[in-house]
Length: 434
Image (cartoon, rainbow, N blue to C red):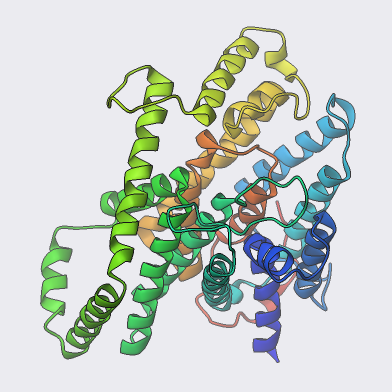
């Protein structure tokens, strides 16, 4: 019964943490439910119901106090500005975002510490399933051809064409990181082979998405591992480990699988190389747009990067005006750079809370990379490092695509876990959140 409860909790958390790929698949590919925000709201309500415990408001678990205070503090500032310093209106969608984010944080405070192993497995399985649904969506989409960005086409009217490839890429990163963390912990030969190919499959999904931020995020994760975790003696240990019988079996199976795949689907290799060329050209465009330095003759202006460059000008203008104290108002300016927008819209106080929250998140993430205290915390640490690039490349400081993962990190990253798999009853008593 406890296992069923933990599975229920974990599914609800995952539906909030990374539910948009499932929403797009059910709503836009399978055509189930209305193609509107009503379906998204119903999906999130179901997720919250799955997370609802029988001991609601009777037993709470302590989150990371620093992240909790800073994160909830910024949300209160944003909510105050939404009601009182708001020139953009009060749409229902914004109210829903605050309600769902607040409810998610409250319910996460009811989740026990020893859910961590079940939760990570659920994160991996659901993200893998979402990767498979993406493949199905692309194969059944008559408008998609190899070379285009991989995403589920929205079925609602006036939606952006081609779907949202950033959601696709994020799901691929989640599946990749969770697979690699589980791979480092498992001892079964077949399980290791399965997780390895799931990681390769996830890399393919990220490549097909053509999301520059996800490419850079993976690079940041690799850099963090090499700087804080990798040691030169690991190479000798790895070479020696290859001669173990189980590891040799895994290596042979992987090589046979890759060779079979390339021999049967050889064109995929050239397709991936084509995507890499496109990515390289776009990076050159961004460099040219941001610095004016043309590194290649084909480099052209990148319009999204140009928007961020002009947004930096708005930041400088605000910095040298009276708006630096209180900001210009809720969603007054869309900069596509969340860390700068928090200052432009909410002034120095909002900027301090949002920037400090992310700085401490980075500190706790690096600490976890070094220590690897448990699998869930390790996953969250690497995932935050990958998504931290978005603070300078896309989104708004209010987006639920930020705050749903943030909420899980507030609850599970950088806290003291019990060494026992099932904490004693006295360890489950009500404890203050701050």
